[in-house]
Length: 113
Length: 117
Image (tube, rainbow over the protein chains, first blue to last red):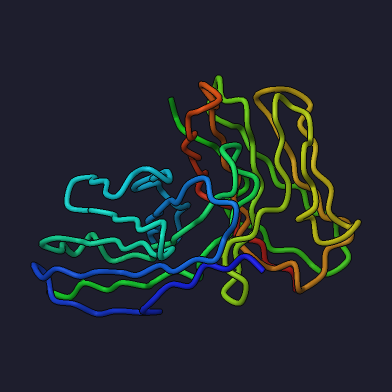
């Protein structure tokens, strides 16, 4: 059964600190892995999309890594800001169309001043 | 572009009533997705359309749920009759597949928070 497991479930850090969120998956076949940020009361917003051949991708202070061999991904947030407080969802797709998605349960991040 | 537009943003209804959720995708996008999000189950794909045609509705929970896309700029998700367990946030998303090898980004709407009493 295809699964996406995220850890930790929740995290509290102080403003300015770095953090790393983890995503392990068992989805097969694999097409791409996406990280989304979801603010409370809003829809998810795409941060990064990585295909099989990509090891790392950055979007500002967000850097995602992918190890397709071990089926692991991480999202690193540098110099956290209060606005980074949100849920971060890892999603693995079996194809490009976007219909064969397996969603992780998300990591809820809270950045405190 | 205003992004994906959903209405209403909040809906409170009584069990047994019909509920219709609406979505306007980003202009020019050829894929439209309906999702449901709950605390227990997270995000779930319900159905998706390509060029207004329903392609995969295997995620639709039961016959009480139906979705239509009469044209490229409008889609509805209908629940009839509604039940308390349908309470969730329903998201619509759209994307554009530019080329076979590309990975299209999905743009989500703000969601409709449905409460069935």
